[in-house]
Amino acid sequence: MTDDLATCRQRIDELDAQLIDLLNQRAEVVLRVGHAKRGDDSAIFVPHREKQVFDRLARYNRGPLSNDSLRAIWREIMSASLALEKPLTICHFAQPGSFTHMAARLKFGQSVAYTPVESHAEVFAEVERGHADYGVVPIENSTDGGITDTIDCFLTTRLRIVNEMSMRIRHHLMARCPPDEIRRIYSKHTVFGQCHRWLSAHMPRAELIETGSTTQAAERAAAEPGSAAIGNKEAAHAFELSLIAQDIEDNTTNTTRFLVLADPKRAAEPTGDDKTSIMFGVQDRPGALYEALIPFHAAAVSLSRIESRPSKRQPWEYLFFIDILAHEKDPRVRDCLAELARCTSVLQVLGSYPRSSAPLND
Image 1 (tube, rainbow, N blue to C red):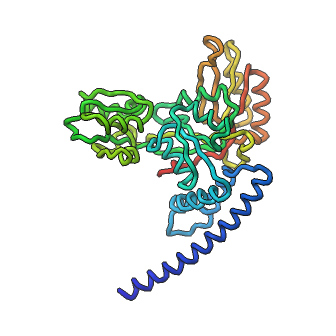
Image 2 (spheres, rainbow, N blue to C red):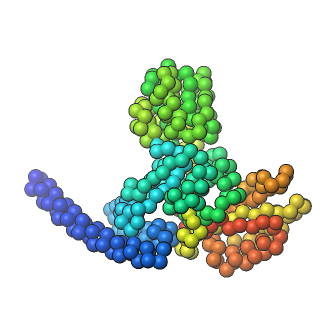
Image 3 (cartoon, rainbow, N blue to C red):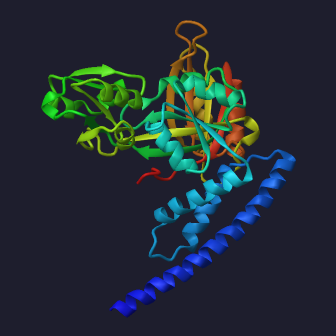
């Protein structure tokens, strides 16, 4: 038994040495790619290329490692590769420990730089000014629907959506005091809504106080006696809070979708499994929205989401945000957009990008 174990460990050491050699050979090729990209100002992060890599890994994989495990390993390899090609800066909403920061890290890995800001609008602004290469913002939650702060930012931006990802949202109650000493709980208003039943059953007398982010909530809970916060485990660790109760969200499939924003020159090419987001306005007359959607039905183009927001230009004027399950370069989509342009007051393609297949943290 001891001899077998020693043999296995020796074999692992030999394979580790081979892996290191192969990874460094890969890194040398990456450096050449980075040099070529700098010569023609190409994008360093290429969403459609990333999807091709992950799809190829799944085809090659024969186990026992799962496809999810391989993706997690390769995400860090690709993160280190991005840093070799060119130092990247990712701007995201809320401080480290927030759900958006977690999503950004799961997407881009540990080897890039992260810049937190306090509002969704600031993310857009930092990328537009060239202070960050990419931005990450939440766009919708499976329980609460669209994130209006993000949606409204698309009314005035030139940025494009180049990627999307989703993340399972798990909420935990955290504090430095015992449960019976908790008098107030801090978190975002959407988090309170997602944990309403649990809070009503277990903390009916606690005062619920809204904050701008779950990280701010954890910071307040750490500083005030008798206070708790609802957030994720990273926030609890960052502010040295104990987990009082875990997974307190009412919906066990609670998921948030996030978008990656970039300059239009970094737009994603078709992969065969894509999504396109558009924004349009219609004239205030009966049947206008129905008429706008007819081309998609006639071309058998699927729509996965439609949401309306006030245009902010004049009272009772609305803009519609739609997600199409195809790339804007698909001939059917091009034809639909041409038809749509004829019956709308404004039309803007917000971006085409690879469709997310599963939460990053499943």
